[in-house]
Length: 135
Image (cartoon, rainbow, N blue to C red; front, side, top):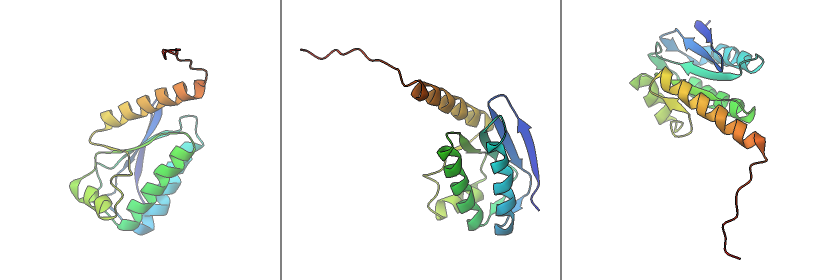
């Protein structure tokens, strides 16, 4: 069983993984905890891995699939505070370029807020632009 600390803010939920070593058997628990956020009123998620010293490759793959699930649901999923060894696991699995990762939790909050604004603008749909082309 994997240990978490959950912190719900106005625009996002932070899931702090408090286990130092996350193995493939814990990946399902991690996914279940993160997916609970999608059914809550605050659907954006920041996954804080500051306390995690190592992850197995199956965990890295599960996190990548989780991020995709969140973005398919039009919500944010940002990972922050990776230790170098954990980052290397993501890199070894060729996942680093596909994941939304920030060095700090504060920067993760900024990404969530920017993505919220972007979604609001895109959902508006009635954005009109002046036509400055010559006739």
